[in-house]
Image 1: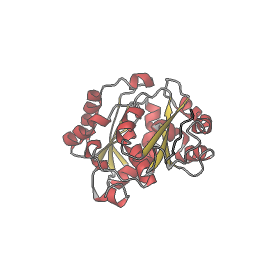
Image 2: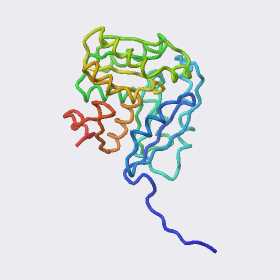
Image 3: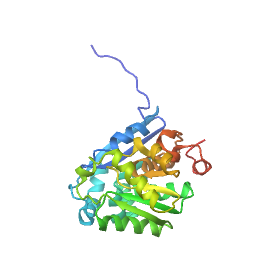
Image 4: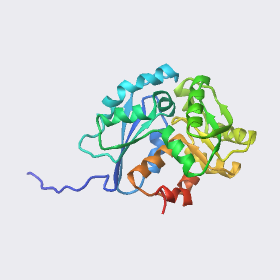
Length: 258
């Protein structure tokens, strides 16, 4: 017996989002599922090859894989925004090259990455002096700091876990990240604290870190999700994800909150 059926608009009736995630990343999907949990929001993941060692040479190799990985996102969907989920690789490759590589396959999608998202978030929050926390080895951190300086920010204080192995980064405890944020914040006055790396487990400690430091905390995953939602015109207010997702005048200006 053949059964009859009806079709509808699918999951993403408000917006469809794609994310390119490192094969070594254990964190971004878990955090994104919490942020993109609203009705009518479709979230789709594709994985990109990456070795465990996070160095400028290994990060640069990802550029050639981006079109093929974007092609593995569901081809029947029209994506409102696609995120490239690696802060350090975006710093090494460059946001423009990342976007161009994605758009060779998904020409109508708006493209973001954690670097561009952090810059946009800092500007939206009116921050100029940043405290900066990374897990990276020195040369990777230096590239990221320079990108932020080129965007007009001052790095008032800096600290790094100096860990090359991505699987080890995924095991750094949220308590250690919180302690690192507090240490950097105590070093010099700053307008916001940036915690860079999609593999650091930050989402659950953002509000606590903001309460302890008194300034906004911007993390790679939180900022990327926020920026992708903004690019798609989707408004979400959820203070449990930090001041960036609160009903501030700056967020209103970017159409993130109402």
